[in-house]
Image (cartoon, rainbow, N blue to C red):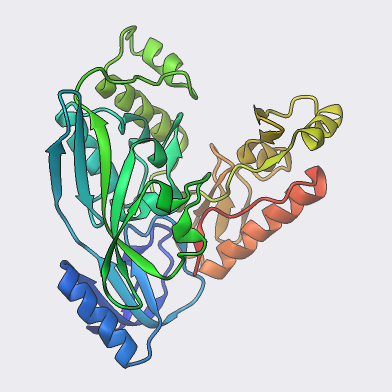
Amino acid sequence: MQENFSLQPFNTFGVDVNAKYFTEVETIDQLKDAIRYSKEHHLSVLFLGGGSNILLTRDFDGLAIKLSLKGISEEDINENEVLVTAKSGENWHEFVLHSLEKNYGGLENLSLIPGNVGTSPMQNIGAYGTEIKDIFVSCTVLDLENLELKTFNLKDCHFGYRDSVFKQEGKGKYVILDVTFRLTKKNHHIKTEYGAIKTELENMGITDPTIQDVSKAVIHIRQSKLPDPKEIGNAGSFFKNPTIPLTQFEDLKQKFENIPGYPNGDMVKVPAGWLIEQCGWKGKQIGNAASHKLQALVIVNATGKATGKEIFDFSTEIIDSVKEKFGIELEREVNII
């Protein structure tokens, strides 16, 4: 247990705030001990994974627990399917690469997403036509009330767009310890119809792609338009893509004929990055915070000296300007602490 501990290395924005207490746990027993300590001393708890989806706006007057549970195991189901279980502290992208090395399919479109395995169900992370819910089987969680282990299956998780039970009614009640995925060993379902994957594969001279080829294409696309948190502080996409009623989209189309939209029944998903760019934010900097020059959806710690509040206030200005111009209220994807 360490006191007045800087959390700057544990959040990808690189915001320098302190936790009153800090500890790192590598086993479930250590985790239980840390939680018992927090209860005995009436301390609030902050769980840290990869630190890629949080914005720390103030010092944390409680116990920050770094979850470093590691390990990957697998169980064959049949000739074509395998269950792969990864503990929460495993780095997500390294887990994807591990699966690809074994020629297990299902994760390739989710390559290079920052963060750890444990947070993947919370956000129902997704990219290029794949979401966690498509390959998710179950996760083991620790109930913070009674410190008992529970299993959540696909139905229990109530997955939605960047959403799950862990962000709604289960928020603050559980810690995810491991996640089990159903992957393919052969007869892989190759998804290349989303984003620029098909174009990227053509540029690579590939016409009959493997899952490894798809992963390489996704990695190249992400690297070309998203900043590396190791080089400039950011948390990836800061806002969710808003979904609006079809009638509202049709009204906006009359005024903004180039507005892109992806219909889903009587609703339409509109790219948040396009909305933000139309309001003049792409590459714009105020103080130490900025919208990235290549992707308006990403807010960056431009100077490395931004406070969490500075970044939060910058995001509020973006939300206000999009609301004023389009009548659409953006929702932050990043968790605000």
